[in-house]
Amino acid sequence: GPAIVWFRRDLRTGDLPTLSAVAGDEVLGLFVLDEALLRPSGASRRDFLYGCLTALDEELGGRLCVVRGDPKVVVPQVARDIGAGEVHVSADFGPYGRARDDAVAREVDLVSTGSPYAVAPGRVTKADGAPYRVFTPYFGRWLDHGWRAPADTSARTVSWLDPGLSIRVPIPRTGSVSRERAGERAALARWAEFRDDDLAGYDTGRDRPDLDRTSRMSVYLKYGCIHPRTMLSDLAGQSGTGSVAFRRQLAWRDFYADVLHHRPDTARRNYDPRFDALRYDSGPDAESAWSAWCAGRTGYPIVDAGMRQLLAEGWMHNRVRMIVASFLLKDLHLPWWRGARYFMRHLVDGDLASNQHGWQWTAGSGTDAAPYFRVFNPISQGQKFDPDGDYVRRWVPELRGIAGARVHTLAGGRPDGYPDPIVDHGIERREALARYGELKRG
Ligand code: FAD
Image 1 (cartoon, protein in one colour):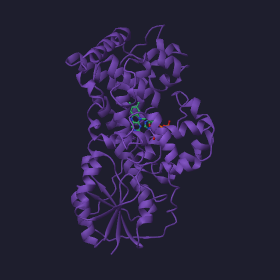
Image 2: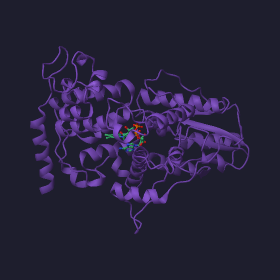
Image 3: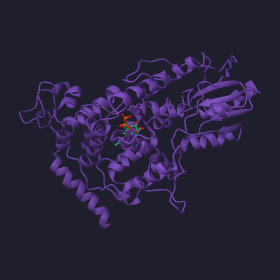
């Protein structure tokens, strides 16, 4: 009988090992709209997903079969309805995805080929087989391990089935906030543009939110509109500082997936349990501070600019993600998982492994023994990484009348409508260090 290719985080037809693994020529392309995954994602990520599905549907000649429901129920049902033999997937290593796939595999012949990573979780280990807890040695082994060449599957001719299933639903359509166009073609075009224009200067430019010179490939990697292998093979043999730095960032994505694979509990809990004893603020003042952070109204310009970029675009520059996270944890004394949940709701690239571990890195409770005593000063971070203040003015309209770097200090006074700082950074920094200090002694 025909086979099913069940798309999840691989919404493309090029370099798709799942497709190479299908023996016959008759294939049903399936996507399941699963409330368990849709519910925690906000409108921006859902919109981008729908855009990717629309693009994939076009690639499949309008034959992508989209159904709604619990995959444990609907995937076996579709397989029965069309008399499919095998259901092909690319492996999912997240806690939810693994449990889901185990359940589906009890009902159908689930064939897993490839993964969304250059080097799949579990592949790179220490000599004794233990997983790495620190990035740099992981990165060394990751480079040695290497990855497969991209599979040329866009030319694989299969006939996509249109079985006219009654449970098929239309792809939802909504307006998107993302700056990036969705889908595989857009991903390849964006990659080519970044590679030709900005890769050479990536190493120095990547920390400057005002210059906005990172790849923005995260949204495409989230849904597998492109495989990291495709990018890595373009970088093969390149030893320029930009290529080297970019390869290293792609390895962070694999590293965090590996960490979450070995420690699925860290999606919600501290990787380092010593941090379980950390004291957090609560009560009405903490809640109003939380609301100010979410809305980008803390009175700290770089923090507010970042939070407003997140709401406006569903994306935030990496440097600013670190600054706003540090502010929530160390100036407002709120727990990392609240910030992480908010990010997951609003980020188009929201990815459980990268997000929870990006937060834990900032908290100091994660891998890499990140020094918990590093407390970002939001004003000097702004001065250093947004030296002319352009990033702040782009996202905080109240501050557009203030020229140059004074937009960070607001030394000449605050314009009407822009809030006073909700906390005093000097005081809260000492408070954070005191609380962290209790842990060390405890
Ligand atoms: P580039 O600088 O162009 O990097 C290229 C690619 O490398 C990225 O697309 C991404 O896949 C990978 N990468 C780069 N930095 C990291 C990193 N620190 N960790 C893991 N992968 C990385 N990234 C997500 O994809 N999803 C998230 O939900 C997410 N949440 C984060 C939360 C916090 C608190 C922090 C500090 C970082 C988070 N990151 C997350 C990592 C990073 O900020 C984004 O990957 C990056 O900003 C995406 O923009 P880009 O594609 O232009 O990055």
